[in-house]
Each structure stands twice: as C-alpha cells, then as structure tokens.
Image (cartoon, rainbow, N blue to C red):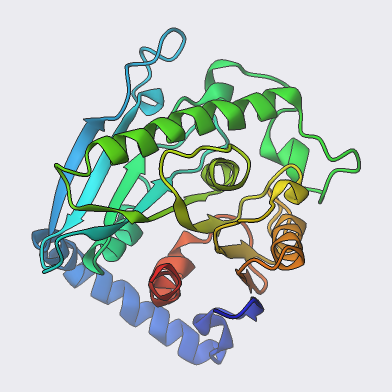
Amino acid sequence: MKKQLIIDTPDLQRMPRALWLTTLLVLSITLVVSGQSTTNALDRELKILRNLRYGDKPPVPYDSDTSSDRTLDLYLPLHTTKKKVPVFLYIHGGGFSGGDKSALSGLLRKLADRGFAVMSVNYRLYLKHHKTSGASARANMSKGLRANGKFHPAMQEAVQTATEDIIQVLSWIKEKSGEYPFDLKRVAIGGGSAGAMAALHVAYASGQRIVPIRAVVNFWGGLQDASIIQKPAPPLLTFHGEKDDLIHVDYAYALDRQMKKIGAVSETHIIKDKGHAIYKIIEAEYVDTIVNFLN
C-alpha cells in the first residue's frame, strides 16, 4: 500500500453552481421519497444487535448516564458466505462530554453491508461528569499543535478513561469470537473527533496486547504527541477537513509525518475547504476508500 497525502475536493464542490443546485434538489427529493425504504432494505441484509454489554456498569458518577454505559451496538452482515468476517470497532465523537453509539449509523450499516462485523460503542464520558474549564478540544487543539506538546490534564484523563473502556471492548471481542463470526486477525479500530483520539491512543499508545489492531481509521482526530507512534504501527487512514476549526488540520499532518518517519503505512485525505465532522461527505464519497484500505 502506498504512503499517501491527498488533498481532496468533494465532488459537489467541483460542479458549476447551477448544476450543483440542481443535483442537490434532486438528491433532496430522492431522499424524501425513497430514503426510508432504502434504509429498511439495507437493514434486511443486516443483523443488528443493540445494547450488548461489554463491561460492568460503571460506578458513580457515570451509573445513571446511558451514554456513558459500557454497551455497544453490533451490525452483522447476513449475506457473507465466510465463516469469519473482519471487525471494525467505531468510537463516536462528542468531545468526551456528549455523543452516543447511535450516531453515524448510516455509514456503519454500509460498512457492515460490505462484509464487516461493525460495532459502535458507548464509553465513559469523562468531561460530561467532570466539567473543567480549558479541557475541551477547542481550547486544546483548535489553534494547531500546542507549543508545550501537552493537553490539559483533564483532557488527558478523558482520553485515558475512554481508552480503558475501549480495551474492555477488545477483550469482549476476543471472548465472543466463538459466539459471533469475528476474525481476530482482522480487527480494525476507528473513530470520529474525540472517538478518533481514543482510537489512536488505543492503537498506538496503550500497549494493549489483547487483540492485534490491523488498521486505524481516523476521522479528524489527533494525538497529544504523534512521536509516541513507533514500530510496529498498524496502517493509518486519516480524513480531516482543511479548515477544521475545532481540531486543527496540523494534527492530521503530524500523524502522517510520524507514520512516514517510522516507515509505516499512512494514507491521509485532507478535504479541501471543509471543517469539522464532515460525516456526510465520508458516507457519500469515501466508503470504497475505507473498505479498500481495511481489506
């Protein structure tokens, strides 16, 4: 696989304005008329298991918060003839203070339909229950790489808390590989924003040895210090908006530089003129890119 840094222009942005508006109108009408039936048809090709528990119910202050509970949703393909299928573990974003595993279900369904066992997980939202001034992604990451190379201690704790829960998910995957068709040699991890930060930390900084991580998909996340990535490092696929004002695009470039420095596989897509959390563009234009990378 080639090491790539790609500046991407979303397809709609390349169209003349009149054609772009016409296309948008047609797409809107199509979604209104047929969107529900399309989703239902796709669901008939999948087995979706919700609120599976991967760990003990967390203690106070998380115990009454369902979004901080240790549960996951599992999307399984029904059309595969393979005995075992690759696993993609997705971690939602929300600044470690919000979000839920139900987010991005459209993209996750599409990946499951392409033959992956996909799981979307909830995890302890540290900053939701430990509100701390100066600990947000905007405060720590919006202006570029920090001069001192350190995040606010509460943000560091939020990343570590999420990491601990995701490692429990990896244990659950291993334990349940006899019950579900999980290929333990093909486990990939990914996430969006805060979830991407947790995914990167699990893959490159945690030292976990429960299940080997085959690949990482990073949607606009980053590491406090990319130099923590050392050999052997699983391949990394990154997507980041060029004009992201929450997590600066420099975090994507830093990851790409470090991966290439150690001779690891890195494919980075910088989405031109776009900001943070551009999931609709990913779902519309990059499913094949993700599937090809993971395969």
